[in-house]
Each structure stands twice: as C-alpha cells, then as structure tokens.
Image (cartoon, rainbow, N blue to C red; front, side):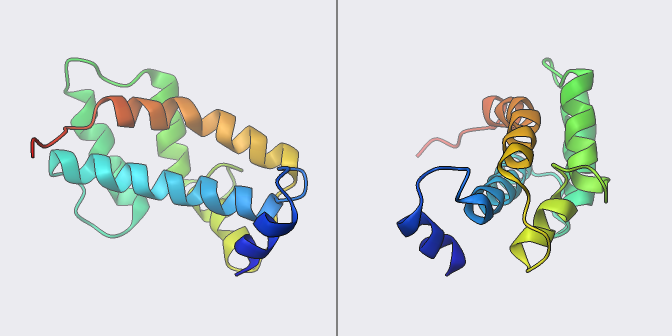
Length: 127
C-alpha cells in the first residue's frame, strides 16, 4: 500500500524511496528465481543458497559470469551489510530503515550488470 501511495504522489526516485527499494529487491528475487528455474538449479526457497547453486552452475557454462558479476551476486545473497544485499533491501520493505535515493541508485547500478547476465543466460522455453 505504501508503494502505491508513493507512486501516486511522486514519480521522482528522490521522493519514491520506499518504492524504488521495494522494486530493486523484487527484481533481484524474481530474476534469480527465474534463472534458477530455467536451468533446474537452486530449488531451495532461500535466496542465498539459490544464488550459490546458480553461481556453481553458471561457472561451468561456456559464458561464465565475470568475477565482478559473481561477487555481486554472492554478496547480494549472503551479505548482511552490503547495501544491495537482499537482507538489507528487505529491511526497508519490512518496516526498517528506508534507503536514500542515492543508496537506491547505487544498489541498482551495482546489481544491474549481474541481473543482466542472468537475464541474458536464461533458458527460454519454446511454447
């Protein structure tokens, strides 16, 4: 409800801090989940173990992730202090500290190459 309210009042990320944080967290979760499902890895519900399984799988592929992408994904799933980590992003979603607009931008800019790698390497099922 808060995200919808912010979205109706503000279209600028400077003012829509909760929504920007929420969307970053949701995009991270959905992209990781879809990559895992598309390759049949990481069936556990927790994001950290799922990312570990993804990285193990991706490291054996013809186009493995760069060290930077692997590090970003690993930190996103396991770090309790990385600003772009799932746990930190979740604090804002569940009533904790809301990141500043600059922190939201930084989180997105850090995660974007890793998310793009996962999107580019998903298996697309033919319909």
